[in-house]
Each structure stands twice: as C-alpha cells, then as structure tokens.
Length: 175
Image (cartoon, rainbow, N blue to C red; front, top):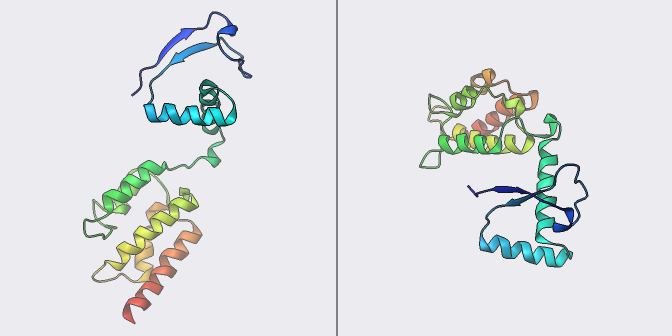
C-alpha cells in the first residue's frame, strides 16, 4: 500500500490551477512504480499537461464513477464473483455446481441473486454452469437442474436458459 502524506498548500500559486478547487488545496505525496511514472509522463507530454493534472483528472473521474446511482454499479462485485467461479473450478477443468463447495452454496452464502448479475457476469456464470452440467455423470432433467437454482432467484431469462440450454446439451450429448 502506498504511503500517503498530506500537507496543506500555503498558496494556490504553488500548484497549477484546479477547476474544482472548492476546498482547501492539499499537497498529497504518494509512491508509484518507475514504469507508471514514465508512462504518466509520456501521456502528459502527448496531452500537453502535467502529470499532476492527469492524476487529479483520474481521481476525479474515479470518484464520479463511485458516486453514480447504484443501478449503474454492479450489485455483485466482479472480483468476488470471479473468486467464487475460480474456487468452484476443478483442477481437471470441470466446474462444481452442487455440494458445500459448489457454486450454488457459495453464491447463495453471499446472499446474492442470479438476477442481480450484470449481462457480462451472467455470461461468465453461464459458461461455467454449462461446463458443470456437461460434467455430470448422470445429468439431471432440465426441470431438476433449474430447480437447483430456485433459491438463487434467477430472472426469467436465466430460468429459460437453465431449462432450455441444458436441454439442448442433453440432446447433443445423446447424439
């Protein structure tokens, strides 16, 4: 974690103008890698501005993103979802759906709903669920498979996929 030190600026002439300076201007010192520092310098040169201005702009944009209404931010953090998907992926490439160490249990333990997944997140989950379904020795009937996920509150589209796509997988595997 970078060390951050704050020191009040005595006069605004010590720094370039800041368009959103509605409070006391602070000098903030933090560390970054040499490679990042160099890359920041190249970008600053291209944009004919200072590194400090780029950092202020980036921080401002990031904070605006955090302040967006909740609907625009995913309800389920990508990192946490990715962690669960990784934990449920077997060493042989399979995917564990059932049991205490399976996706349903781990996802449900977080109190999440499938319907809260973003479209991109649902695509990741679908891919893993298909791998898990294909890995069943005795594949459940489509309605049984769909029922496994009922406590995770899938959307209508997700329910249709759980029952429809898995049915196609059964047909393909029997062919």
